[in-house]
Amino acid sequence: MIDFQYAGVTSDGKPCQGSVRAPNADSARLRLIGQGITPVRISGGVGDVERNPEASRSTELKRKDILLFSREMAHLKQANMPLDRALAMLKETADNERLKSFIARVEEGVRGGKSLYQSLAPFESDLGRQYLVLVRAGETSGALHVVLKELTVQLEAEDKLRSYVISSMTYPVILLVVAVLSVVLLLAFVVPQFREIFDSMGEALPYSTQLVVRFSDLIRARWMELLLGLTTVLFLFSRWAATPAGRMHIDQLLLGIPLLGPVLKNLQFAMYFRTFGILLQRGIPMVDALKIAIDTLTNTVLRKDLEPLVDTVKTGKRLSSGFDVRYFHKTSTPQLIRVAEETGQLDATLLALADRHEEEGRRTMTRVLAAMEPLIIILLGLVVAFIIISILGGVLAINDTI
Image 1 (tube, one colour):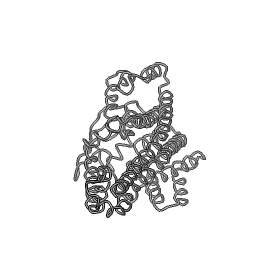
Image 2 (image 1 turned 30 degrees about the vertical axis):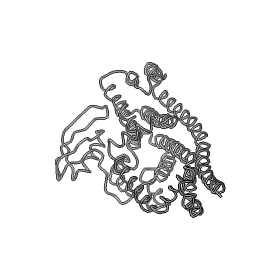
Image 3 (image 1 turned 180 degrees about the vertical axis):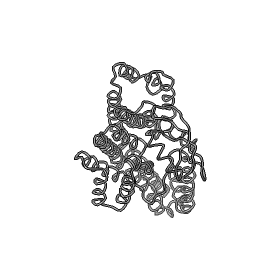
Image 4 (image 1 turned 45 degrees about the vertical axis):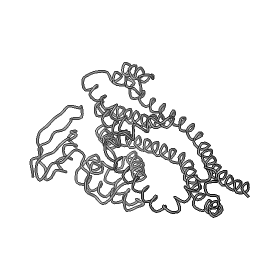
């Protein structure tokens, strides 16, 4: 056994520190989590362990696995089946080795005397902090099956929203790819058919025809260099986008795009408010709920703007006073939250705000897609028309010369 020194945050948001005896750093972290302490740093033994270290494992869960596990566990726990028996049954009926391995690891922890929350902790990177915190709240309150049902509903709603976004963007993306390929094929294979005819005219060709011919020659002669250059640019861009500064610039740019920016903001806020409201409903302290809700924001600009809410609540100020930021100061959100704080209906108001932002995001996305499809078709038509007219202009110029 080793003495580990730790610094962490209690369930009510207060900082704490001390020591805990455990055979290794992972066990020390699990013991602290079981005591209601979120470890920020654990030191001692061979090395230091940062918050939320990812346990070494060979399986990586997919969202459909998590959804299936949550749904089936909710049904079995509602039938008052013991936790170990429920896990054993789920392991037998698992439809893939990845899910079976995950359930086996969880079952091993439960049979070793750990709670479901402690057994799921090594999979935090797949499940998310919100999932684990709600499971802990369900076990503490004796309403685990209710919490698992809520998690199932939320996961289904998130999958539905994600599927809606993907299906909505599929056709415009395909249309854009076809448009680009059509232009490339015209320049690479159609225009060269007139090359010998146009060569005899020299500078007498119209400027638009000369421009199209030069682009065609460039694509045919330098296609490998162009492809390599495009690949290099994309690679460097991806590396830059992975840096904090690059990610911040890209997220800021996305929020500033007309029509698309409001869609991103509304969908992000919908996820944020829904997570915040569900956590408060299950009795999670507001500071912890705020921290977990902020983790759901994938846009770094929005996350940076909303992070000060945690300090606002810690200092004893009203939550509504912290929502007077650039995204909400011209909306009714601060007033609604202030009224909800006074009436004790904060969780219900947050869930209503989530529904409002999601609906607004869907409506705006519908308008964006309705405008994007004809816009791509019009741009494609203009480019193709320019190429064809340029070719015809060159042919007519030859006829005039003859």
